[in-house]
Amino acid sequence: MPKAQNIINGQFQDSQTTQWIDLHNPANNDLIGQVPCSTTAEMKAAVDSAAEAFKTWQHSTVMTRQSLMFNLVRLIRANMGEVAKLITKEQGKTLADAEGDVLRGLQVVEHACGIPSLLMGETAQTIAQDMDAYSYRVPLGVCAGIAPFNFPAMIPLWMFPLAIACGNTYVLKPSERDPGAAMFLSKLAIDAGVPAGVLNVIHGGPDAVNFLLDEKRIKAVSFVGSDTVGRHIWERGSLNGKRVQSNMGAKNHGVIMPDANRTATLNALVGAAFGAAGQRCMALSVAVFVGDSKQWLPDLVTMAKALKVNAGHVPGTDVCPMISPKARQRAFDIVEKSVKQGAKLLLDGRGVTVPGYEKGNWMGPTVLAGVTPEMECYKEEIFGPVLVCVEAANLDEAIKLVNDNDWGNGTAIFTTSGAVARKYTAQIESGQVGINVPIPVPLPFFSFTGNKRSILGDLNFYGKAGVQFYTQLKTITSLWRETDATVLKAATSMPTMK
Ligand code: NAD
Image (cartoon, rainbow, N blue to C red; front, side):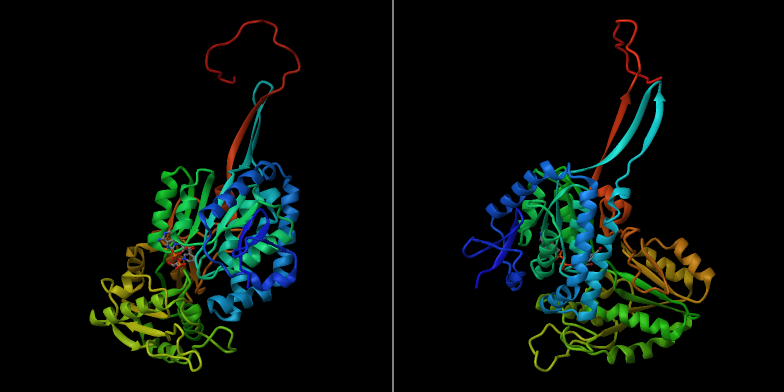
C-alpha cells in the first residue's frame, strides 16, 4: 500500500513510489497519517517550496486570507467527527475528548477570520509639517511549527492558520507519534484554498527538528512540548537568529478551600486530574487541600477508583491508554520512587489491564497523598493519571507552595468566597488561573499565557500576542508637500522632523 508522506507544494507524496497523490480524491483519505520520516532532500524541498510561495503570498490581499480562514472553519466544522475519530484511533483519547481537541483548535481558526482587524497598525498624523507616520504589521517569511503528541489537532491549529493569515508561509512538523490529524487538517487547508507551497508538512523526530532550527530561510519557530526539548529548541533557534516561542511542561496546582462547593469541586478535580490519562499540559496534577478540605480525600479516591479505563473508542471510557510503554514505565517509576520517599499510595493504578487489549499502555487513576515538595512525584511532570495530594494549613501557605514551584502554566482555586478568590488571583504567579474552573485554557481572543518555566520566548500563542509573533512592524514616514522647496541647499544635520 502506498504511503502518503510529505505535503510539498500543495501535494501529497507517496513515499514508496515518490509519485504525487491526488489530494482532492476522497478515496485517498485513508492514506493520510501513514508517515515515515522525511529525508533531508524532502525537508529541503518543503522549505524551497515555502520560500518560493512567500514571494507571492506576502502580497495576497488581507481579504483573500480572511476568506480562506472562513473556508477552513467551514471545512473543519464539516469534518470534525472524522478528525476526532482519527485522533481516537491513532492517539487513544476518548472520542469526546478528541472532539474537544479539534474544537479548541477550530476556535483559533475562527479568531483568525478577524485577520483584517488583527493586522491593523498605528498612525500618527502631522508628526512634522506635511509629514505623517504609520506602521504596518508585515509577515516574517517562512515559519515553522513543531507539535507534541497530546493535542494532535489543537496545537497544529494554534500554529499554521494564524501564521498563514498573517501572510507567512509554513512548514509544520507534527508529532511523529500521531501525525494523522495534522495531515488531515493540512489537507482541509489545501481544500480551503491555501495555495501550493504556502503550507508544507514534514515528518520526523530530532533530526527533522534540528533541520528546521538550522535552516536559514526559516524566520520563526513555534514549539509546544516537553521541558528539555523546548529549552533546546529555544536555545538553538535563538542562536540561529530566529524568533522562537516555546511552550513547555507544567505542574498545575488545584487549591481546595474548605468552603468550596464539595460535589462540584470533587467532580472538577477528578476530571482534570485523570481525563486524557493526565496527558494534558493543563491537567490538575497537584491537589492542595487547605485545612479541613482534606477530609474529602477518601471520596476523591472512591470517585477515581470508579473511573472506567479503556480504549478511547469504547463508549463510557473515562481514562484512555498512555501514549507509549516508555511514558507509562516512567510514570510507574516515579510512583515507586515517591512511595519509597514516604508518599502514601491511596490508589494504585499500575496493575490495571483491559481485557482484549492486554498489551495496551494502561495506567489506572493513581492517588499519592502526604506528598512533600522534595519527592519525585512533586518535582517531575508525570504526564500520566497520577494525582499528587499535599496539604496546607491556610490560604497563605497554599499560595507560597504554588509560587515556590518552578512551573507557571496554570492553577485553579475552588472556593465560594469572592475575597479568597480575589486574593489568590492577585498573589499567585501562574499565568492562567481558574476560579472554580479546573482547566482554564483561555479562548483565542486572549492568549495562552503560561509563564515561569512553562514558556521560553516573549510572545504567547494565539490572540494578540500570536499575531505579534507572526508579524513584524514596518513604520513609514511620509512627506507630501504641495510645493517644491524654494532654496537649493541640502541639510546635512540629523533630521529633527520639526
Ligand atoms: P516532546 O517534547 O517529546 O515532543 C514534542 C516535539 O518535539 C515532537 O514534535 C518531537 O518530534 C520533538 N522532539 C522530541 N524529542 C526531541 C529532541 N530530542 N530534539 C528535538 N526535537 C525533539 O513532547 P510530547 O511528549 O510530544 O508532549 C508532551 C509535553 O508537551 C508535556 O511536557 C506537556 O506539558 C507539553 N505541552 C505543553 C503545552 C503548553 O502549551 N505549555 C501544551 C501541550 C503539551
